[in-house]
Amino acid sequence: NGSYGSRLLKQHDVPKANVVVFFNPGFTVPDYTWKESLACIPTGTPFLSTTNTEMEGIADCQFLLDQDRIQSIPPGLAEMF
Image 1: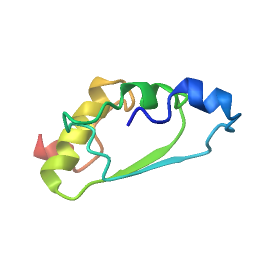
Image 2: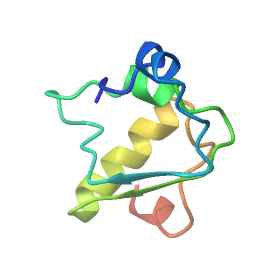
Image 3: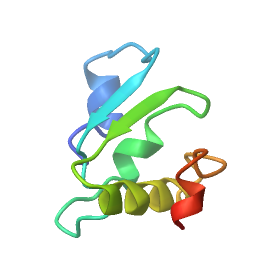
């Protein structure tokens, strides 16, 4: 949640990820700020995100859509919107 900003990644010469996995990240929780960390992930990098609840999954997908990290709501989930 901001801990992995571009400065930190460059400072430690962290290689580009092949895939990124988020375990219950809380993208929409006001206590966390994900914009800087998400900006460090190159466009086109595949990622997986898990959540604890269906509602949180919907909110996280909407957040990722609003941040241009996904281009559409995943099939099946769109029916819940």
